[in-house]
Length: 90
Image (tube, rainbow, N blue to C red; front, top):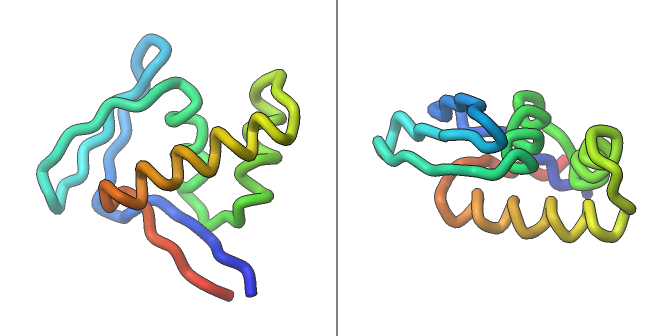
């Protein structure tokens, strides 16, 4: 089985200079995210598996697979805790 992730439908994202602001309409909470976080949330407009997110980060930035994987996993953990993403098994 493959786990896919996507942005919560109540999420709104605004990219600013080098970072982003995220509003969760359901909880009415604001979050700030790094430029990398904005890139990952952009990718999560559509359901994506972990390996697709890692590949997307590697395409956008000059990072190796290990660093991209670590960054994506850490960001997904924070997003999961804040209720910003949804997961499904397929």
